Length: 469
Image (tube, rainbow, N blue to C red):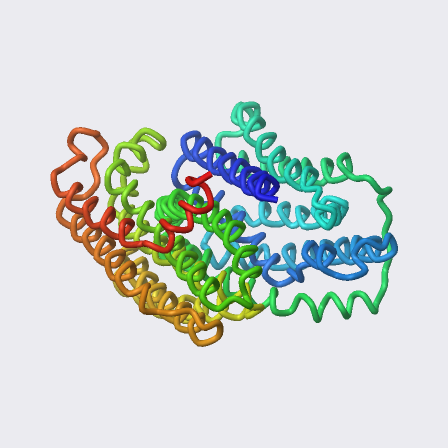
């Protein structure tokens, strides 16, 4: 079971890493303004995904009739219908969306992107159904190979186009590759059906996921839309790249820790002490991911950014550490949500995320009056701190998680974040390694290591789970 979980996490990590590589390559090939436009493509598709996601891929795994060929046909039919509707919506909003961002000259590109949901609607659901039988190979292949194909396609595309169209075509290549592989890896013949009773069931199943999707859109894309509209595409390019570089590792590691802790927590639901200990370790794991990210960025962020992106993205250095601390707090929330999910309380994540979404009007007001991206990041950071406190409070209230053991790790993690922010304010990251490693970086590293050392439950869990073997 652990090997299968590792395969799932590795496949997801490989795919995420390749998408990051694709973004970095395109950012080096095109101007910051063109990369800013390219980054709005993913936001446009996220809008439609937010409005139509019902978790059909999860439903076929957990539904008692999910293995029934007739049910699979109906789900594939519903998925295609969803793709058609999503494409129509995206096509309809393409021009207003371009006008909102002040890039009406690329409205045609958003209209072209509208066909991607239709392509995704043709996927074969065997890659999801086979998870019921612990066969994860088709899903792993469809998650890992399409990003690789899209990366390899960049070089010929770069000869044809020298702007945001490289990203546009690579997104189509990725979507088409995923759909094609879903059919190649399938065991059953592809067929479509339409069952209105199943559509009603799927709607009931998926509406909480739809609601959380709206919140996650605000968390991941709200500030991007604000920055793009108010400050322009060049500023959006810097802001989006900072988000991508700091968000990707936290998403991968948070997914890995949830895969590790959720089965253990679910199995210990009836054993109060074991559940509390595992719950503490789960929350500490979220904190540890954030602290490790801060440590890595403080020590090596400046030189690595310069190596990856060159001088034209030097402005990232001014916002890199604040963005990192904000993402560190965001990922810390995942531990409490995992604990609650183990006791089938899925609303914790939404409750923690709603605070960040409610902060968006404040960010919009602030950026229109200051024109400062850092202000947006600090507002989001405060919202994420509040979300973390809500997350662990709800986990304690709903699951019996003890908050006492989390006080010291939380406080030391907060001190590590505060030290990193203070250090970056007075001594911003620098592109050269020797110049970057100022003595103050080691002061921040001390707080990070102290925070990691204080996480006794996590240390104990890792020792028992891996090191003692």
